Amino acid sequence: MLTRPDPGSVTILFEGAPIRARAGESVASALLAAGILAVRTTPVSGAPRGPFCMMGACFDCLAVVDGVGGVQTCLVPVREGMRIERQHGARDVAAEDAA
Image 1 (cartoon, helix red, strand yellow):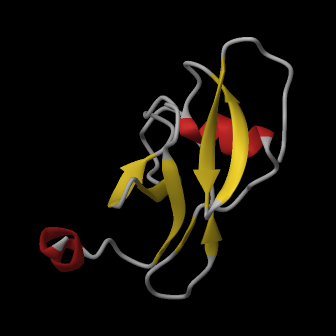
Image 2: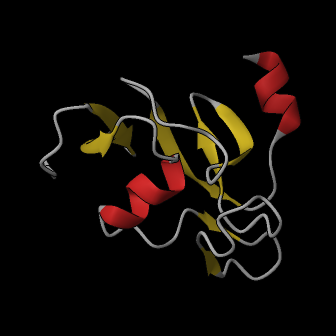
Image 3: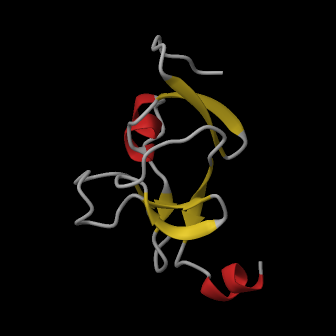
């Protein structure tokens, strides 16, 4: 498990692996601090993408958060037990509606 010294920390799961994150920081910054640079692949070419602008303008940080695709991870604060997965291609709205 990756750890960072911070008394106000939470544990999030990235593709099943636990990561310690600072309470209140964004999911994107927690993943970057843990060395995770790519959180999605593009729908057409499958190229990896990761957080870029860190303010919600570019949409490169989209990931699946707690089963919901297309989440801008730079705008979402971490919380204990959050599950984050890479988003492959476009968001699958039909699969989310069925869940």
